[in-house]
Image (cartoon, rainbow, N blue to C red):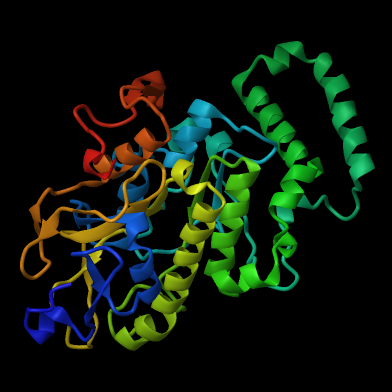
Length: 387
């Protein structure tokens, strides 16, 4: 925040103190202020992609802007490839589903990319805040009961034994792996229980907020407990037809009032609940929680009373996973226009995630045409000031 700047830069909100000396945040995040000792801010992020949502989604979730027809895999897909699953649940899950339209007609960066569809994250495709919430992919088709599904699996195994020459092909192996993964999920009590929010006390569900994002945060905690390695939470699914962070100030986009009265309270409540819950359960130290964005907002308030796209400078923040809380890394210039100290790009953010996951940044992936593809660009390091 820039409380000493002119009104067209500082905007209508005031800074408030947090539980960490020297750190102030916006008054629209009062619950964040109470747990500032648990997270650390990086206030000098930027990227060089176009100021469109899709480009930012790509860069902030893969570390690269897609070029030449090459789609870099999502960080969760990389983890899926390198470490695999550790339970009947998928290695990587996206809640409530992968991102929709962003206005740029570009891939959203939430797929397996050149690693293949086998490493796409599992997409929930449902709203966990609804009373009739069920996970579609955990339900066999109504005409196929569990016993019949099991018979189909056994029959498939018999047929497969006669097709050894076919099974040797890459496509056949992928088909079989996907079938087995889907079968394990559909028949696993562990997987079903992880998605059953009704097992949570009503007070816990209310603490997170009885809305889509709040219940997705709670579900994320349950999935981490159940053995999922990587969970991606999309606060919103598109920037169209709903009130979102896209605060251009006038319809069809969100106003400052919409952010203050709807978006910020929902986000503030759910995020603080997630951090406190993970901490109380002893999970925070081993679970990195990253709060990312595709870009920031223009330093000056626009004529409609909102702010527009600005990839030149913005804030991200991190908690858990070895991160020391209550810290501020970097700073922006007097109007929040560009980094003035310790600029941080998407590659460093992704490297930080990989470091917390225990991955070797010197690793190479099997890239397009079989060429080795570096996990991060040469010389890229994590934001080591966080640890």
